[in-house]
Structure formats: C-alpha cells, structure tokens
Image (cartoon, rainbow, N blue to C red; front, side, top):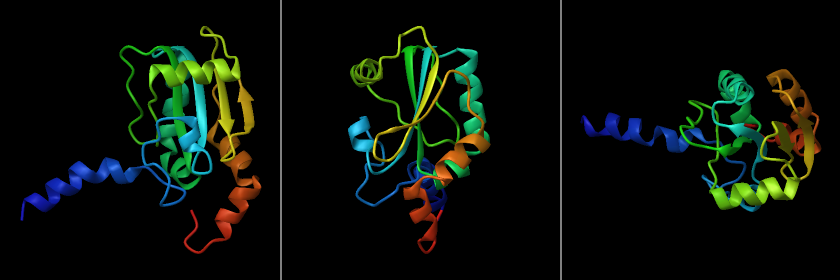
Length: 158
C-alpha cells in the first residue's frame, strides 16, 4: 500500500507538463517538436544567474497554472548554462547546446543580449521584449490569439 503514494510522488512531474494534444512530445527536444503543440517562451540570457532571467522565471512560477492552461513552454536559451536551476512549477524545456545555438542563430540574438520571444503554436513571433514580461501581458496576448480562442471554446477547455 505504501508503493502507490510513492509512485504518485515520483510520477507527478511527468504529468505537470500540459500538452496541447496527445500526439505532442511531453518533453520536446527542439522547436520543431514544439510546433502546433506549445507556445514556446524563449528567454535568451547571457548567463544562468542573470537577474532578468531569474525574475522572468520567478514570475512564470507564480502563474504556472496559467502557463499550463495556455500551453506555454518556458525555454531558456542561456549562453553559460552552468549552475542553471529549472523552474519549480512552470512547464519548461531544456534543450541541447546544439539546439540552443541553432535557435540563437535562427533568431539572430547575440550571446550577450537578454531577449524574450513568445512564439505562437505555428512558430511565428508573437512578442519580442528586452525586459521581463508580466503574466497579465502574456495572458492577454495569448488569449487574443485565434488558436487560443478556439481552445477556450472546447469542452473542458483550459
């Protein structure tokens, strides 16, 4: 009988990640795998300890349920990722250094620059900011997206 609570405790992180559809990767390894499944929030940061990254991550953790409901996937793109601590509650993706370099190159973000990009499920840039973004701003922007409007109309919508 003690095994069931332990199993639930160990498996809980696997179910904390919201998925848009059952065929979406639970832990996507690239932006390609995120397309039509998640809304990646790319946070480009010069280091894992940059105050702006820490602030954005903390802000997201405070509204983790909102991020799950909107299929937002926090994706840090950190130049020096040593000692990086992932979020406690926010859905996130930690990608390989090769993938991070390709993302940085694709969006032409210098390694020393802090930039936030919110991508729509179709991969288009919906928001660009050089400062941390509030939850209210993210929620309002996402809720105005046509695909989000359709999501909210479905039964048991997020």
